[in-house]
Length: 572
Image (cartoon, rainbow, N blue to C red; front, side, top):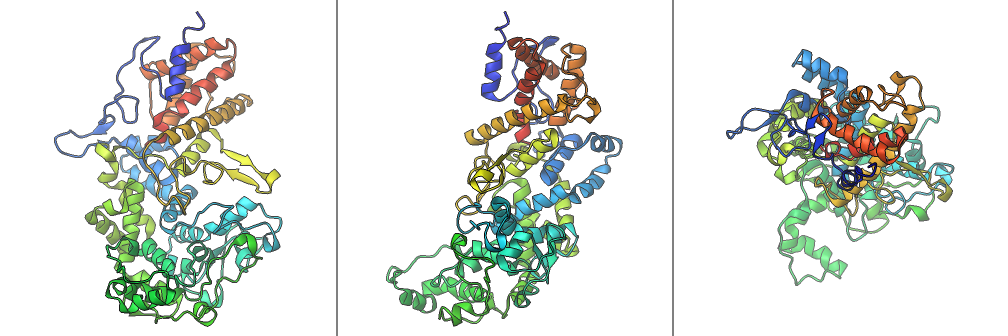
Protein backbone atom coordinates (compact mmCIF):
# COMPACT_ATOMS: atom_id res chain seq x y z
CA UNK A 1 0.00 0.00 0.00
CA UNK A 2 2.84 2.39 0.66
CA UNK A 3 3.74 2.31 -3.04
CA UNK A 4 0.34 3.53 -4.22
CA UNK A 5 1.20 7.26 -4.22
CA UNK A 6 4.31 6.70 -6.36
CA UNK A 7 2.57 7.23 -9.71
CA UNK A 8 1.14 10.70 -9.01
CA UNK A 9 4.38 11.67 -7.31
CA UNK A 10 6.44 10.64 -10.33
CA UNK A 11 4.05 12.43 -12.64
CA UNK A 12 4.41 15.55 -10.54
CA UNK A 13 8.19 15.50 -10.63
CA UNK A 14 8.14 14.78 -14.37
CA UNK A 15 5.72 17.55 -15.24
CA UNK A 16 6.85 20.13 -12.69
CA UNK A 17 3.28 21.04 -11.68
CA UNK A 18 0.96 20.33 -8.78
CA UNK A 19 -1.10 17.17 -9.24
CA UNK A 20 -4.73 17.53 -10.23
CA UNK A 21 -7.31 15.44 -8.44
CA UNK A 22 -8.86 15.12 -5.00
CA UNK A 23 -7.48 16.04 -1.65
CA UNK A 24 -8.40 14.40 1.60
CA UNK A 25 -11.22 16.86 2.26
CA UNK A 26 -13.03 16.72 -1.03
CA UNK A 27 -12.65 17.22 -4.77
CA UNK A 28 -10.26 19.83 -6.04
CA UNK A 29 -11.93 22.86 -7.57
CA UNK A 30 -10.81 24.85 -10.58
CA UNK A 31 -8.38 27.60 -9.71
CA UNK A 32 -9.97 31.03 -9.59
CA UNK A 33 -7.11 33.42 -8.98
CA UNK A 34 -4.29 34.67 -11.15
CA UNK A 35 -1.27 32.47 -11.46
CA UNK A 36 -2.94 29.26 -10.35
CA UNK A 37 -2.70 25.95 -12.10
CA UNK A 38 -6.14 26.41 -13.64
CA UNK A 39 -6.64 27.17 -17.32
CA UNK A 40 -8.74 30.30 -16.94
CA UNK A 41 -6.75 33.16 -18.54
CA UNK A 42 -8.87 35.75 -16.73
CA UNK A 43 -8.35 34.30 -13.26
CA UNK A 44 -7.53 36.78 -10.53
CA UNK A 45 -8.59 39.77 -12.63
CA UNK A 46 -11.11 42.56 -12.51
CA UNK A 47 -13.36 43.85 -15.24
CA UNK A 48 -15.40 42.03 -17.87
CA UNK A 49 -14.48 40.58 -21.23
CA UNK A 50 -16.64 42.85 -23.36
CA UNK A 51 -13.72 44.15 -25.36
CA UNK A 52 -12.16 45.94 -22.41
CA UNK A 53 -8.71 44.97 -21.10
CA UNK A 54 -8.78 42.54 -18.21
CA UNK A 55 -6.70 43.79 -15.29
CA UNK A 56 -5.07 42.03 -12.39
CA UNK A 57 -6.62 42.54 -8.99
CA UNK A 58 -4.65 44.86 -6.66
CA UNK A 59 -2.87 42.03 -4.83
CA UNK A 60 -1.61 40.38 -8.03
CA UNK A 61 -0.84 43.78 -9.49
CA UNK A 62 1.46 44.55 -6.57
CA UNK A 63 3.12 41.16 -6.98
CA UNK A 64 3.84 41.91 -10.66
CA UNK A 65 5.25 45.33 -9.86
CA UNK A 66 7.45 43.99 -7.07
CA UNK A 67 8.78 41.17 -9.25
CA UNK A 68 9.42 43.50 -12.17
CA UNK A 69 11.26 46.11 -10.13
CA UNK A 70 13.01 43.95 -7.52
CA UNK A 71 12.74 40.28 -8.46
CA UNK A 72 11.11 39.40 -5.10
CA UNK A 73 7.57 38.97 -3.80
CA UNK A 74 5.90 41.69 -1.72
CA UNK A 75 6.05 41.15 2.03
CA UNK A 76 3.01 40.39 4.16
CA UNK A 77 3.30 43.96 5.47
CA UNK A 78 3.13 45.28 1.90
CA UNK A 79 -0.02 43.30 1.19
CA UNK A 80 -1.55 44.47 4.45
CA UNK A 81 -0.78 48.10 3.67
CA UNK A 82 -2.42 47.75 0.26
CA UNK A 83 -5.50 46.08 1.73
CA UNK A 84 -5.86 48.89 4.27
CA UNK A 85 -5.37 51.68 1.72
CA UNK A 86 -5.50 51.24 -2.08
CA UNK A 87 -3.46 54.45 -2.42
CA UNK A 88 -0.56 52.65 -0.73
CA UNK A 89 0.36 51.15 -4.12
CA UNK A 90 2.09 54.37 -5.18
CA UNK A 91 4.04 54.61 -1.91
CA UNK A 92 5.12 50.98 -2.16
CA UNK A 93 6.40 51.56 -5.70
CA UNK A 94 8.53 54.43 -4.36
CA UNK A 95 10.00 52.08 -1.76
CA UNK A 96 10.72 49.44 -4.39
CA UNK A 97 12.38 52.00 -6.68
CA UNK A 98 14.69 53.03 -3.84
CA UNK A 99 15.78 49.46 -3.08
CA UNK A 100 19.18 48.01 -4.07
CA UNK A 101 17.33 45.27 -5.97
CA UNK A 102 15.99 47.88 -8.38
CA UNK A 103 19.59 48.88 -9.04
CA UNK A 104 20.26 45.34 -10.25
CA UNK A 105 17.23 45.64 -12.53
CA UNK A 106 18.57 48.92 -13.95
CA UNK A 107 21.84 47.19 -14.77
CA UNK A 108 20.06 44.27 -16.39
CA UNK A 109 17.85 46.56 -18.46
CA UNK A 110 20.74 48.65 -19.74
CA UNK A 111 22.82 45.59 -20.52
CA UNK A 112 20.14 44.77 -23.10
CA UNK A 113 21.13 48.04 -24.77
CA UNK A 114 24.89 48.17 -24.22
CA UNK A 115 25.60 44.42 -24.42
CA UNK A 116 28.63 44.64 -22.13
CA UNK A 117 28.27 41.53 -19.91
CA UNK A 118 30.13 39.00 -22.03
CA UNK A 119 31.66 35.64 -21.06
CA UNK A 120 34.27 36.15 -18.37
CA UNK A 121 36.94 33.87 -19.86
CA UNK A 122 36.94 34.67 -23.58
CA UNK A 123 37.67 37.75 -25.70
CA UNK A 124 36.66 40.53 -25.60
CA UNK A 125 36.99 39.75 -21.87
CA UNK A 126 39.31 37.12 -20.39
CA UNK A 127 41.44 39.36 -18.15
CA UNK A 128 43.93 37.30 -16.14
CA UNK A 129 44.82 37.68 -12.46
CA UNK A 130 48.23 39.21 -13.19
CA UNK A 131 49.98 42.58 -13.07
CA UNK A 132 47.54 45.06 -11.54
CA UNK A 133 44.93 42.31 -11.23
CA UNK A 134 47.28 39.90 -9.45
CA UNK A 135 45.64 38.03 -6.59
CA UNK A 136 42.09 38.90 -7.65
CA UNK A 137 39.32 36.37 -8.20
CA UNK A 138 39.37 35.92 -11.98
CA UNK A 139 35.59 35.66 -12.35
CA UNK A 140 34.84 38.60 -10.05
CA UNK A 141 37.54 40.77 -11.60
CA UNK A 142 36.26 40.28 -15.14
CA UNK A 143 32.70 40.93 -14.03
CA UNK A 144 33.72 44.12 -12.22
CA UNK A 145 35.50 45.39 -15.33
CA UNK A 146 32.51 44.64 -17.55
CA UNK A 147 29.94 46.09 -15.15
CA UNK A 148 31.55 49.53 -14.89
CA UNK A 149 29.32 51.34 -17.43
CA UNK A 150 26.22 49.71 -15.96
CA UNK A 151 27.29 50.72 -12.45
CA UNK A 152 27.56 54.34 -13.57
CA UNK A 153 24.01 54.22 -14.95
CA UNK A 154 22.80 52.57 -11.74
CA UNK A 155 24.50 55.32 -9.72
CA UNK A 156 22.78 58.04 -11.75
CA UNK A 157 19.37 56.42 -11.30
CA UNK A 158 19.77 55.43 -7.65
CA UNK A 159 21.04 58.91 -6.70
CA UNK A 160 18.08 60.59 -8.43
CA UNK A 161 20.44 62.46 -10.70
CA UNK A 162 19.35 63.68 -14.14
CA UNK A 163 19.16 60.66 -16.44
CA UNK A 164 21.01 62.56 -19.17
CA UNK A 165 24.06 62.36 -16.91
CA UNK A 166 24.72 58.80 -18.11
CA UNK A 167 26.35 60.36 -21.20
CA UNK A 168 27.53 63.70 -19.70
CA UNK A 169 28.85 62.83 -16.22
CA UNK A 170 32.22 64.31 -15.29
CA UNK A 171 32.98 61.23 -13.17
CA UNK A 172 33.21 57.49 -13.61
CA UNK A 173 32.37 54.48 -11.42
CA UNK A 174 35.44 52.42 -10.60
CA UNK A 175 36.08 49.07 -8.93
CA UNK A 176 39.47 47.72 -7.85
CA UNK A 177 39.52 45.55 -10.97
CA UNK A 178 38.53 48.24 -13.48
CA UNK A 179 41.00 50.64 -11.88
CA UNK A 180 43.76 48.07 -12.29
CA UNK A 181 42.74 47.26 -15.85
CA UNK A 182 42.70 50.86 -17.10
CA UNK A 183 45.00 52.68 -14.69
CA UNK A 184 42.28 54.66 -12.90
CA UNK A 185 42.39 56.04 -9.34
CA UNK A 186 40.95 53.82 -6.59
CA UNK A 187 41.01 53.94 -2.80
CA UNK A 188 41.60 50.42 -1.40
CA UNK A 189 40.06 51.49 1.91
CA UNK A 190 36.90 52.77 0.25
CA UNK A 191 33.75 51.19 -1.13
CA UNK A 192 33.77 48.38 -3.68
CA UNK A 193 32.48 50.86 -6.29
CA UNK A 194 33.72 54.43 -6.10
CA UNK A 195 33.06 57.68 -7.89
CA UNK A 196 36.38 58.77 -9.39
CA UNK A 197 37.66 61.23 -11.97
CA UNK A 198 38.22 59.87 -15.47
CA UNK A 199 41.34 60.86 -17.42
CA UNK A 200 41.40 64.55 -18.30
CA UNK A 201 40.69 63.89 -22.00
CA UNK A 202 37.62 61.81 -21.14
CA UNK A 203 35.72 64.21 -18.90
CA UNK A 204 32.01 64.99 -19.16
CA UNK A 205 31.20 61.95 -21.28
CA UNK A 206 29.57 59.51 -18.85
CA UNK A 207 29.70 55.94 -20.08
CA UNK A 208 31.28 57.15 -23.33
CA UNK A 209 34.47 57.47 -21.29
CA UNK A 210 34.42 53.82 -20.26
CA UNK A 211 37.23 51.81 -21.86
CA UNK A 212 35.46 48.47 -21.44
CA UNK A 213 32.48 49.68 -23.50
CA UNK A 214 34.80 50.20 -26.46
CA UNK A 215 36.77 47.04 -25.79
CA UNK A 216 33.51 45.10 -25.95
CA UNK A 217 32.55 47.02 -29.10
CA UNK A 218 35.99 46.98 -30.65
CA UNK A 219 37.12 48.09 -34.07
CA UNK A 220 39.59 47.02 -36.70
CA UNK A 221 41.62 49.49 -38.73
CA UNK A 222 39.39 49.10 -41.76
CA UNK A 223 36.14 49.26 -39.80
CA UNK A 224 37.36 52.63 -38.51
CA UNK A 225 35.05 52.75 -35.47
CA UNK A 226 31.85 52.38 -37.49
CA UNK A 227 30.77 49.44 -35.33
CA UNK A 228 31.36 51.53 -32.23
CA UNK A 229 29.30 54.38 -33.63
CA UNK A 230 26.48 52.01 -34.46
CA UNK A 231 26.61 50.45 -30.99
CA UNK A 232 26.17 53.89 -29.41
CA UNK A 233 23.39 54.89 -31.81
CA UNK A 234 21.61 51.59 -31.25
CA UNK A 235 21.90 51.77 -27.46
CA UNK A 236 20.98 55.41 -26.87
CA UNK A 237 18.93 56.44 -29.91
CA UNK A 238 17.39 53.10 -30.93
CA UNK A 239 18.91 53.78 -34.34
CA UNK A 240 20.56 50.69 -35.83
CA UNK A 241 22.25 51.26 -39.17
CA UNK A 242 22.22 47.51 -39.71
CA UNK A 243 18.42 47.62 -39.95
CA UNK A 244 18.41 49.91 -42.97
CA UNK A 245 17.26 48.39 -46.24
CA UNK A 246 19.99 48.99 -48.79
CA UNK A 247 20.99 47.27 -51.98
CA UNK A 248 24.73 46.62 -52.04
CA UNK A 249 26.40 47.65 -55.27
CA UNK A 250 28.02 44.42 -56.58
CA UNK A 251 30.56 46.42 -58.56
CA UNK A 252 32.41 47.40 -55.35
CA UNK A 253 35.31 45.09 -54.52
CA UNK A 254 34.71 44.51 -50.82
CA UNK A 255 38.05 42.72 -50.52
CA UNK A 256 39.94 45.90 -51.49
CA UNK A 257 40.17 48.35 -48.56
CA UNK A 258 40.97 51.27 -50.89
CA UNK A 259 37.97 50.49 -53.09
CA UNK A 260 35.74 50.35 -50.03
CA UNK A 261 37.15 53.60 -48.66
CA UNK A 262 36.37 55.32 -51.94
CA UNK A 263 32.92 53.79 -52.24
CA UNK A 264 31.71 54.98 -48.85
CA UNK A 265 32.21 58.53 -50.05
CA UNK A 266 31.60 58.41 -53.80
CA UNK A 267 29.18 55.52 -54.37
CA UNK A 268 25.62 56.74 -53.92
CA UNK A 269 24.38 53.46 -52.44
CA UNK A 270 27.17 53.29 -49.86
CA UNK A 271 27.21 56.99 -49.06
CA UNK A 272 23.53 56.94 -48.03
CA UNK A 273 24.56 55.45 -44.67
CA UNK A 274 28.17 56.46 -44.42
CA UNK A 275 27.54 60.19 -44.73
CA UNK A 276 25.99 59.90 -41.26
CA UNK A 277 27.80 56.90 -39.81
CA UNK A 278 31.40 57.87 -40.60
CA UNK A 279 31.29 61.36 -39.05
CA UNK A 280 29.70 59.79 -35.97
CA UNK A 281 32.48 57.17 -35.89
CA UNK A 282 35.03 59.99 -35.93
CA UNK A 283 34.17 60.80 -32.31
CA UNK A 284 35.76 57.50 -31.25
CA UNK A 285 39.06 58.02 -33.05
CA UNK A 286 40.99 57.99 -29.77
CA UNK A 287 39.91 54.51 -28.70
CA UNK A 288 42.41 51.92 -29.82
CA UNK A 289 41.37 48.77 -31.65
CA UNK A 290 40.22 45.87 -29.51
CA UNK A 291 42.84 43.64 -27.93
CA UNK A 292 43.04 40.13 -26.47
CA UNK A 293 43.23 40.58 -22.67
CA UNK A 294 44.99 37.22 -22.28
CA UNK A 295 47.99 38.51 -24.21
CA UNK A 296 48.60 41.96 -22.73
CA UNK A 297 49.67 43.48 -19.44
CA UNK A 298 47.62 45.71 -17.14
CA UNK A 299 46.90 48.52 -16.88
CA UNK A 300 46.01 49.14 -20.50
CA UNK A 301 45.86 52.69 -21.82
CA UNK A 302 42.94 52.17 -24.17
CA UNK A 303 42.49 55.80 -25.24
CA UNK A 304 44.90 58.19 -26.94
CA UNK A 305 43.57 61.20 -28.81
CA UNK A 306 43.67 60.72 -32.58
CA UNK A 307 45.05 57.16 -32.41
CA UNK A 308 43.47 55.92 -35.63
CA UNK A 309 44.82 58.89 -37.59
CA UNK A 310 48.24 59.45 -36.04
CA UNK A 311 49.26 55.82 -35.46
CA UNK A 312 47.22 53.74 -37.90
CA UNK A 313 47.15 56.37 -40.65
CA UNK A 314 43.40 56.09 -41.29
CA UNK A 315 41.92 59.22 -42.90
CA UNK A 316 39.13 60.69 -40.79
CA UNK A 317 36.13 62.78 -41.63
CA UNK A 318 35.31 65.68 -39.36
CA UNK A 319 33.17 64.55 -36.42
CA UNK A 320 29.48 65.37 -36.84
CA UNK A 321 26.45 64.19 -34.94
CA UNK A 322 23.67 63.84 -37.53
CA UNK A 323 24.79 67.18 -39.00
CA UNK A 324 25.70 68.91 -35.72
CA UNK A 325 29.36 69.83 -35.34
CA UNK A 326 31.34 68.44 -32.43
CA UNK A 327 34.89 67.44 -31.61
CA UNK A 328 35.23 65.47 -28.36
CA UNK A 329 33.41 62.67 -26.58
CA UNK A 330 32.08 65.35 -24.23
CA UNK A 331 30.55 67.09 -27.24
CA UNK A 332 29.02 63.82 -28.35
CA UNK A 333 27.53 63.23 -24.90
CA UNK A 334 26.07 66.74 -24.82
CA UNK A 335 24.53 66.31 -28.28
CA UNK A 336 23.13 62.91 -27.36
CA UNK A 337 21.57 64.16 -24.13
CA UNK A 338 19.46 66.86 -25.84
CA UNK A 339 18.45 64.76 -28.83
CA UNK A 340 14.72 63.93 -28.44
CA UNK A 341 15.54 60.42 -29.68
CA UNK A 342 17.66 59.87 -26.55
CA UNK A 343 14.74 60.20 -24.14
CA UNK A 344 12.37 58.45 -26.54
CA UNK A 345 14.77 55.53 -26.85
CA UNK A 346 15.07 55.30 -23.06
CA UNK A 347 11.28 55.15 -22.86
CA UNK A 348 11.04 52.54 -25.60
CA UNK A 349 13.68 50.34 -24.01
CA UNK A 350 12.06 50.55 -20.57
CA UNK A 351 8.65 49.71 -22.02
CA UNK A 352 10.05 46.80 -24.03
CA UNK A 353 11.95 45.45 -21.02
CA UNK A 354 9.12 45.54 -18.50
CA UNK A 355 6.42 44.50 -20.96
CA UNK A 356 8.76 41.83 -22.34
CA UNK A 357 8.24 42.66 -25.98
CA UNK A 358 10.40 43.59 -28.95
CA UNK A 359 11.66 47.15 -29.18
CA UNK A 360 9.92 47.59 -32.52
CA UNK A 361 6.60 46.50 -31.03
CA UNK A 362 6.46 49.29 -28.42
CA UNK A 363 3.45 51.51 -29.18
CA UNK A 364 4.69 54.97 -30.14
CA UNK A 365 1.89 56.61 -28.18
CA UNK A 366 2.90 54.89 -24.94
CA UNK A 367 6.58 55.54 -25.56
CA UNK A 368 5.83 59.23 -26.13
CA UNK A 369 3.86 59.43 -22.89
CA UNK A 370 6.74 57.91 -20.95
CA UNK A 371 9.20 60.14 -22.77
CA UNK A 372 7.22 63.19 -21.63
CA UNK A 373 7.56 62.06 -18.01
CA UNK A 374 11.31 61.62 -18.43
CA UNK A 375 11.75 64.95 -20.21
CA UNK A 376 9.70 66.85 -17.65
CA UNK A 377 11.51 65.38 -14.66
CA UNK A 378 14.84 64.12 -16.07
CA UNK A 379 14.22 61.42 -13.46
CA UNK A 380 14.39 57.83 -14.62
CA UNK A 381 12.55 56.53 -11.56
CA UNK A 382 9.61 58.81 -12.28
CA UNK A 383 9.30 57.32 -15.75
CA UNK A 384 9.48 53.74 -14.45
CA UNK A 385 6.88 54.53 -11.79
CA UNK A 386 4.51 55.85 -14.45
CA UNK A 387 5.17 52.71 -16.50
CA UNK A 388 4.42 50.13 -13.82
CA UNK A 389 1.39 51.95 -12.41
CA UNK A 390 -0.27 52.26 -15.81
CA UNK A 391 -3.20 49.99 -16.56
CA UNK A 392 -1.49 48.45 -19.57
CA UNK A 393 1.15 46.98 -17.22
CA UNK A 394 -1.64 45.35 -15.19
CA UNK A 395 -3.12 43.59 -18.21
CA UNK A 396 -3.94 39.94 -17.52
CA UNK A 397 -5.37 38.96 -20.89
CA UNK A 398 -3.80 37.81 -24.13
CA UNK A 399 -0.05 37.92 -24.68
CA UNK A 400 0.29 40.58 -21.98
CA UNK A 401 -1.24 38.35 -19.34
CA UNK A 402 1.97 36.85 -18.02
CA UNK A 403 5.52 38.11 -17.46
CA UNK A 404 8.31 35.57 -17.20
CA UNK A 405 11.05 36.01 -14.64
CA UNK A 406 14.39 36.78 -16.24
CA UNK A 407 17.39 34.83 -14.90
CA UNK A 408 18.44 37.51 -12.42
CA UNK A 409 14.85 37.84 -11.14
CA UNK A 410 14.47 34.09 -10.74
CA UNK A 411 17.78 33.82 -8.90
CA UNK A 412 16.90 36.76 -6.64
CA UNK A 413 13.43 35.37 -5.90
CA UNK A 414 14.76 31.96 -4.89
CA UNK A 415 17.49 33.58 -2.80
CA UNK A 416 14.96 35.79 -1.03
CA UNK A 417 12.69 32.82 -0.29
CA UNK A 418 15.27 30.20 0.63
CA UNK A 419 18.62 31.92 1.13
CA UNK A 420 20.08 29.75 -1.63
CA UNK A 421 22.26 31.19 -4.39
CA UNK A 422 23.36 28.71 -7.05
CA UNK A 423 27.14 29.01 -7.15
CA UNK A 424 30.09 26.77 -7.89
CA UNK A 425 33.66 27.18 -6.69
CA UNK A 426 36.22 27.06 -9.51
CA UNK A 427 39.14 28.14 -7.32
CA UNK A 428 40.93 24.89 -8.08
CA UNK A 429 41.04 26.05 -11.70
CA UNK A 430 42.06 29.60 -10.82
CA UNK A 431 38.69 31.07 -11.68
CA UNK A 432 37.04 31.71 -8.30
CA UNK A 433 33.37 31.47 -7.36
CA UNK A 434 30.86 31.48 -10.21
CA UNK A 435 27.16 32.41 -9.98
CA UNK A 436 25.54 29.81 -12.22
CA UNK A 437 22.38 31.83 -12.85
CA UNK A 438 24.44 34.85 -13.85
CA UNK A 439 27.04 33.20 -16.10
CA UNK A 440 26.56 32.14 -19.71
CA UNK A 441 29.82 30.26 -20.30
CA UNK A 442 29.76 27.61 -17.57
CA UNK A 443 26.48 28.58 -15.94
CA UNK A 444 22.87 28.58 -17.10
CA UNK A 445 22.10 32.23 -17.84
CA UNK A 446 21.38 31.71 -21.55
CA UNK A 447 19.58 28.42 -20.95
CA UNK A 448 17.31 30.28 -18.51
CA UNK A 449 16.44 32.87 -21.16
CA UNK A 450 19.23 35.43 -20.71
CA UNK A 451 21.87 36.72 -23.09
CA UNK A 452 25.63 36.46 -23.35
CA UNK A 453 25.89 39.91 -25.03
CA UNK A 454 27.99 38.61 -27.94
CA UNK A 455 26.34 35.61 -29.60
CA UNK A 456 22.95 35.81 -27.87
CA UNK A 457 21.95 39.48 -27.80
CA UNK A 458 18.26 39.33 -26.87
CA UNK A 459 16.44 37.75 -23.95
CA UNK A 460 13.91 34.99 -24.48
CA UNK A 461 10.52 35.16 -22.80
CA UNK A 462 9.15 31.83 -24.01
CA UNK A 463 9.09 28.90 -21.63
CA UNK A 464 11.18 26.16 -23.22
CA UNK A 465 12.66 22.80 -22.36
CA UNK A 466 15.93 24.39 -21.22
CA UNK A 467 14.26 26.99 -19.00
CA UNK A 468 12.16 24.23 -17.44
CA UNK A 469 15.24 22.11 -16.76
CA UNK A 470 17.07 25.06 -15.18
CA UNK A 471 14.09 25.83 -12.95
CA UNK A 472 13.81 22.19 -11.86
CA UNK A 473 17.48 21.95 -10.99
CA UNK A 474 17.40 25.29 -9.15
CA UNK A 475 14.27 24.21 -7.24
CA UNK A 476 15.82 20.93 -6.16
CA UNK A 477 19.01 22.58 -4.94
CA UNK A 478 17.21 25.40 -3.12
CA UNK A 479 14.63 23.12 -1.51
CA UNK A 480 17.25 20.79 -0.11
CA UNK A 481 19.29 23.70 1.19
CA UNK A 482 16.52 25.59 2.97
CA UNK A 483 14.98 22.46 4.54
CA UNK A 484 18.31 21.49 6.07
CA UNK A 485 19.04 25.05 7.20
CA UNK A 486 15.59 25.76 8.64
CA UNK A 487 15.29 22.58 10.66
CA UNK A 488 18.80 23.09 12.01
CA UNK A 489 17.46 26.22 13.78
CA UNK A 490 15.47 25.61 16.96
CA UNK A 491 13.85 29.04 17.01
CA UNK A 492 11.04 28.72 14.46
CA UNK A 493 10.67 32.49 14.16
CA UNK A 494 14.26 32.72 12.90
CA UNK A 495 13.64 30.33 10.01
CA UNK A 496 12.96 31.36 6.42
CA UNK A 497 10.04 29.14 5.40
CA UNK A 498 9.25 26.44 7.97
CA UNK A 499 8.21 28.67 10.83
CA UNK A 500 5.14 26.67 11.93
CA UNK A 501 6.32 23.06 12.11
CA UNK A 502 9.01 20.95 13.73
CA UNK A 503 10.91 18.13 12.11
CA UNK A 504 8.57 15.56 13.69
CA UNK A 505 5.21 17.17 12.84
CA UNK A 506 3.10 15.04 10.50
CA UNK A 507 -0.48 15.82 11.54
CA UNK A 508 -2.85 17.88 9.42
CA UNK A 509 -3.43 20.41 12.19
CA UNK A 510 0.22 21.49 11.91
CA UNK A 511 0.85 20.77 8.25
CA UNK A 512 -2.05 22.66 6.70
CA UNK A 513 -1.15 26.10 8.18
CA UNK A 514 2.48 25.55 7.17
CA UNK A 515 1.49 24.64 3.61
CA UNK A 516 -0.81 27.66 3.39
CA UNK A 517 2.13 29.80 4.51
CA UNK A 518 4.31 28.32 1.75
CA UNK A 519 1.69 29.20 -0.85
CA UNK A 520 1.55 32.76 0.45
CA UNK A 521 5.31 33.18 0.46
CA UNK A 522 5.98 31.48 -2.88
CA UNK A 523 2.95 32.46 -4.95
CA UNK A 524 1.47 35.46 -3.15
CA UNK A 525 -1.79 33.57 -2.56
CA UNK A 526 -3.56 33.96 0.76
CA UNK A 527 -5.27 30.56 1.10
CA UNK A 528 -7.36 29.20 3.93
CA UNK A 529 -6.00 26.10 5.64
CA UNK A 530 -8.81 24.02 4.15
CA UNK A 531 -8.41 25.33 0.60
CA UNK A 532 -8.34 22.51 -1.98
CA UNK A 533 -4.90 23.54 -3.21
CA UNK A 534 -3.56 23.22 0.33
CA UNK A 535 -5.08 19.77 0.35
CA UNK A 536 -3.36 18.85 -2.92
CA UNK A 537 0.01 19.89 -1.54
CA UNK A 538 -0.70 17.98 1.66
CA UNK A 539 -1.36 14.85 -0.39
CA UNK A 540 2.01 15.31 -2.08
CA UNK A 541 3.73 15.59 1.31
CA UNK A 542 1.97 12.44 2.54
CA UNK A 543 2.92 10.55 -0.63
CA UNK A 544 6.56 11.52 -0.22
CA UNK A 545 6.50 10.53 3.44
CA UNK A 546 4.93 7.17 2.58
CA UNK A 547 7.89 6.39 0.32
CA UNK A 548 10.33 7.02 3.17
CA UNK A 549 8.39 6.63 6.45
CA UNK A 550 9.75 8.77 9.24
CA UNK A 551 11.90 11.00 6.99
CA UNK A 552 9.99 14.26 7.40
CA UNK A 553 12.80 16.38 6.02
CA UNK A 554 12.85 14.35 2.81
CA UNK A 555 9.08 14.77 2.47
CA UNK A 556 9.42 18.54 2.83
CA UNK A 557 12.25 18.58 0.27
CA UNK A 558 10.10 16.73 -2.27
CA UNK A 559 7.12 19.00 -1.57
CA UNK A 560 9.10 22.22 -1.72
CA UNK A 561 10.94 21.10 -4.86
CA UNK A 562 7.57 20.65 -6.56
CA UNK A 563 6.34 24.05 -5.40
CA UNK A 564 9.50 25.87 -6.46
CA UNK A 565 9.38 24.41 -9.95
CA UNK A 566 5.69 25.30 -10.34
CA UNK A 567 5.18 27.57 -13.33
CA UNK A 568 3.94 30.28 -10.97
CA UNK A 569 7.52 30.75 -9.81
CA UNK A 570 8.67 31.39 -13.38
CA UNK A 571 5.81 33.76 -14.26
CA UNK A 572 4.20 36.73 -12.55
